[in-house]
Amino acid sequence: MFLRSVLRCIRAIVVLCVFSSMGIGLVGAEKENTGGSSGSGFIIHSDGFILTNNHVVKGAKGILVVLSDARKYEAKVVMADEDKDIAMLKIGAVNLPKVRLGDSNQMEVTDYVMVLGYPLASELGTEVSFSDGRINAKRESERFPIFQIDANINPGNSGGPVVNDRGEVIGIAVAKLNAAKMLIESGVLPERINFAIPIYSANQLIRAAYPLGVERVSNRTRMEQRDIFRQVKRATVLILAVSEEEDPDFVLVKGGCYEMGDTFSEGVSDEKPLHKVCVDGFYMGRYEVTQAQWEKVMGSNPSFFKKGGRYPVEQVSWDDVQIYISKLNQQTGRKYRLPTEAEWEYACREGGKKVRFGTGTDRINSGIANYNARADYKQPYSDAGEYRSQTTPVGNFKANSLGLYDMSGNVWEWVEDVYSADAYSQSVKDNPIYTKSGADRVFRGGSWYRYPQGVRCSSRANLVPGRRLSYIGFRLVFFR
Picture 1: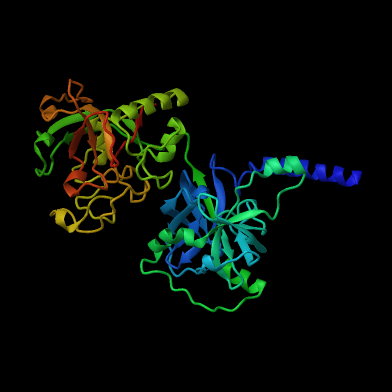
Picture 2 (picture 1 turned 180 degrees about the vertical axis):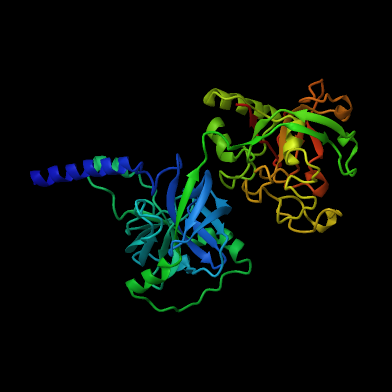
């Protein structure tokens, strides 16, 4: 008995050391998003729609999906529910193998389940693991219903499919146990006590892939274990997430001179007169500042559209942004600030070119930017299209030639200048910034809410610096 206890303690110490060396906190199914993480997911639609846990991709700077045949695709988060810990990804591939979706409402305690996924230590998607067991309990007391299962969920398997004995996905694997605490208290790993989110909790996300609903075939027969594994393995994917850096990603915008203002003679009076300005080189944020970046510095997320860390932060006033910048500068030792109007427009126009939109084009449509593209607002330089009525993840559309994303649409972006309708008539040539007295500050670039005229590079807007709206965010510049 004494020898057995000693061996058990040694095993616990060894396991703790191994997990610590892998960077696993033993509080979930994979490493937290500090420098990157891995998890699992499964294809629900042959056009590249994938379900996983939100915590696998939350705050990720980039997401790589590896298919069971080792093909790799960059992925975007198209929808997320942070409360239920579910996210929908999309990759640019078609004709993919997909899982069959079952009815989790029909599952009962003691029903058979199989969990599939990629162990954290596996090489890029070459080995799918599985564990089978049964449902121990249906827990209704949580924030949302979950299944407690006795099938193992190994590190890295979070987000993988949980399948019934007919090969249908009825849940999404997720581990939420504080395993380290149990290991210390009992000397053993808490294997075979894990959880699954019922697939019906993802119905809203699934509708994004199946607007008309999912056709479910009833009375499927039970399958052998090997056949379930073989079938579902093909649609199970490895997800590699690269987390946000401590500060936003920046690109160099080389200095130069350009004609600032209404270059196409189609704007309003405050875009006039057209005037020549010159700006020094600067570094500008490749993306709008995200919710993850804001929350890391400020400790909270004020956004109306709380859909994931990669979405732009909004509902931040100009005054709020100054506090964020001050804290960020203290933490990083750098000198961040908002761009001036002249810098912002110069970057939007790809270094001062005569170009109408921040997409690098003179014509715009909802396939290249997030704005109000309803037919009612169509212009000679725009096409009627989709009105999303919400923000999209930063970098969701193609960048301009400088590598800057969402310069037209998604969220308006605060700049440094005080607003004046006749600021251009008072402008100096070199590095202009309007700082005279005024009640409002300027924001640029248009938003998901704005129609085509408002997402032009030359369009200006203004608001009192204390106002917060769901369509105003910002991006930063800094000097080395």
